[in-house]
Amino acid sequence: MTRSLGPETIEIIRTTVPVLEQHGPAITAAMYERLFQDAEIAALFNQANQKRGTQIHALAGAILAYARNIENLAALGPAVERIAQKHIGYAIHPDHYPHVARALLAAIEEVLGDAATPAIIGAWEQAFWSLAAILTSREAEIREQIEADPGGWRDWRRFVIVDRRAESDTIMSFTLRPEDGGKVIPHRPGQYLTFRFDAAGQTGLKRNFSISCGPNADHYRITVKREPKGEASVFLHDTAVTGTVLEATPPAGEFYLHPDQARPVVLLSGGVGLTPMVSMVEDIASRRPDLPAYYVHGTTSRGTHAMDTQIRHLARRHGKISVATFYERSDPGSEANEGMITLDWLKANTPLEEADVFLCGPKPFLRHFVAALADEGVPANRIHYEFFGPADETLAA
Image (cartoon, rainbow, N blue to C red; front, side):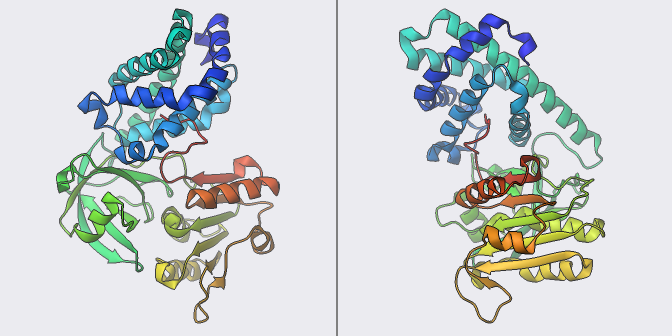
């Protein structure tokens, strides 16, 4: 990436780091305000993230990370992959990039005022298009791979809810098949689908949901917790019925169990973060007879615990899957441990010294365990995690 940027441009970008540290969120807020004046562009985004402000801070962190690593952009490789996968999910194409470029450069000028010299604007324009070239190239590769599969498709495809199943007091699963009757591309266990709800009468509503079934060519399943203020989850739980049509882009995401996984795996989840783990357990149970797995899940109580019977059945059938559950509330009649998952328990009961650890759950859960595992000496390349929503700590767009 740096080969396309001259030394003078790189130096100018480096000098803007203190400014971005101070004004980054103001710049990205101004950028989105300009960008969303175009209704067609605004429709590409998940507006819930905009309302919460999470995307503004995520993008500010992304721009800052880019400037800080302008001489070592290889360090941003995983984050670039995350962006490319998100762009596949939201059906973002090369012709959308000029809109972002104009809005970003105008926002820098607006927020910095006289400090935004022509040299600074010119350097950031070059830097933007250098990164855009990498992203669009990777996105083209991903789309080519997807469309080469017999079940692959491009952008939005109509799916029908063919089954609803209550999994707990607050969690429900939805099985979806293509309306056209065709096959689906088998996902990688851990990936998500991006949905838009226009066809169901919820115009403009978009959400990502992890796929909670094992890879197959017939259907997908998502497992959704009802959040009282969550537009999509409330609609799915209270209004959607068998026959409801949703539109989805192909499976995406860089968080998944690799087909050639050789090391043992520890699957660690909190709350509804169990959804990608269920997909992984199904895959391990059906396709990987020799892979040892340790599934550890924490939730509030038996009433909020989804899919436990299914997971334990798969574990018994496989023979090398260990299952442990922690309930915050005491439940003497269950197989669950009382209290919270701890690092000491994981050290005593799972092979952290040799395993790959996959984590999914609320941000406080992830921040705690990602840091704790790193402090314990688990190498970064063996710690894999998925955030719900934009990840402030990663490069995002």
